[in-house]
Image (cartoon, rainbow, N blue to C red; front, side, top):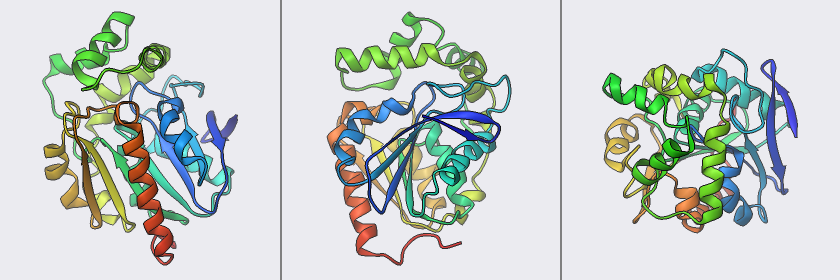
Length: 268
C-alpha cells in the first residue's frame, strides 16, 4: 500500500498483528521485500511494517531529498500515519544509519532498536575512485552481479533471491543510486547516536565486507549506550537472505526480552 509521508507516497508492506510492531528499513539497493524470509517467520507473532525508501522499490522517486533527515522523515511519517503505539526499528546497512538517526530523536513509542550490518554513524571513508565505483554498482545486470559475488554476500543466494536482488538494484531511481555513495554515507551523526536510550541489538555478519564486525566494534558500539552485538558465522552483508532463520531468531529473542521488561523503551 502507499502511505502519504513527508510530501511523497511511500510504499509499505503491512501484515500481521500484535502489541509490538516491527518497522523494517532496507539497505542501499534493496526494498521492503529484502526482508521477506525474516518476515515470514516473525509475522506469526508481530505486526510487521516494511518500508521502501524513497527512490527504491515502489516508493516515489523525487529528484532530490535523499539525505538521512529525508529518509528518516519518510519513515517517521509512516509510523505516525499507521498510528503505531509501540514498535522496534530494524534497519539494515543504509537503513541502519537511518534508524540510528530516528532513534536518537527519542520518538514516542520506540521500544527498541535492531541494527543489521548497519552503516556506522561516522562518515564512510573510501578513495574517490572506489566511491564512484559504488555509485555505478547498480548500473547494469553485470555490475549488480559483480557486487553480489564480490562484495555483498559470503554465501550463495538461491536463484530466486539472486534474481530479486538484481531486480531491486536495477529498479532504483538514478538520484537514489548516487545519493548514498556520494553524499548521504558521508553524513556524520556520531554525536547524535549517544542520545539513543532504548535497548539496541547489533547483528553483524562474520564475513561482511561492507560493514565488518571490527568496524562496528570501533565506530558504533561505544557510541550507543545500551548496544550489544551478535555475530553470525559464515555470513556476509545480506544476512537476511544468507542466514534468515538466524536473523529472525535474534530479532524474536530481542523482542521477547522487551516483553519481559515492559518498562523499557522511550516514553517521550
